[in-house]
Amino acid sequence: MNELPRKLSLLKLSVMSRQLETVLAEAASKNLSVAATLEWLADLELEGRRQHAIQRRFRFSRLQTQPTIEEFHFQHHKSRLQIKSKIRSSGIVCVNS
Image (cartoon, rainbow, N blue to C red; front, side, top):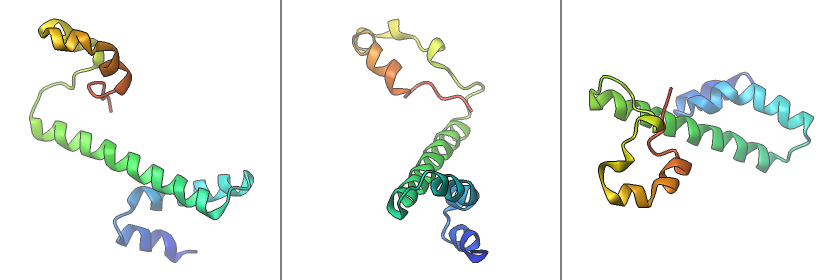
């Protein structure tokens, strides 16, 4: 099993590589199937990539501060007011790292 984290890293699955031991130990304690464990690892990888993409986009935007949902101006346009609850629940604007 010493080679698996290295192979995952070579495949650019860095989150899976970092979380492998923890997830395998917890999956064993919960008696999860192999498929459920792989799905869990894949979900972690996808979330890590999503977070990295958000950080990268913010860095490339050259904005000085990262806005939070509390700082979002819903009154700017009436269409924003109409979908205010959907925006708040989706987390589209609320990105803090």
